[in-house]
Length: 276
Ligand SMILES: C[S@@+](CC[C@H](N)C(=O)[O-])C[C@H]1O[C@@H](n2cnc3c(N)ncnc32)[C@H](O)[C@@H]1O
Image (cartoon, rainbow, N blue to C red; front, side, top):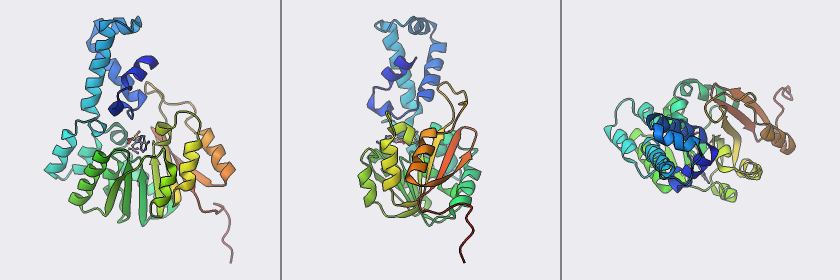
């Protein structure tokens, strides 16, 4: 299955989709097409049917994963309706944010209980997450960055329609020095981003965390394995070791499908009694 997932994700517009999501789509398609299923199980990678399976899965991903494909009509249509459930409907379009729908009403409360209510927020590799702004219960200025321009244009339209004081702009996180050019903020979100952009090692994660001008960085990670089963050990040991080495303290918030590291960039011992 790993080879098939890799092959399917060779198309540029599908590369940011999580492997677990691709796998569940493969399973759906194969369940509907026993002939294709047999060929895939037999690993007949050169056969006509194997190629057809790839094509069908890609087609389905393109329509379901509107956000990062050329099929932008679903989100545009919802946005233009301007109804009361705008945020909820838009968040349902994308797997990461859909999964968080139950969590959104309480997760920001938990995060801000640690960081304090921010006046400025930066959301890196933001996807659809900025749509969840109403759940933050804040009037904070919101900076959001995504890889492609179209997603940013859409988010800026959403900010305008909803009156949110926000600005979305394109930024490639593989160039972490660019982070120095972004205004300083209180809290920076890195939700499910570090696992997405790093394939080998964690140098980039370290550069991003160090370079971003924020008092706090909140990095989150999926806690489900490929196929949807929960990870036995959902913590990111590499991140904990790195933070200890560079001297940043952190607290962990563990939710059902996601783990959040709330990282303090300013040096302060959590339990130290304030000096008089
Ligand atoms: C799993 S999604 C998470 C989206 C969002 N942060 C959330 O949690 O809802 C990973 C995001 O990283 C973005 N991304 C991937 N590579 C990137 C890069 N090189 N620079 C900036 N963003 C990137 C993708 O476009 C995608 O929105």
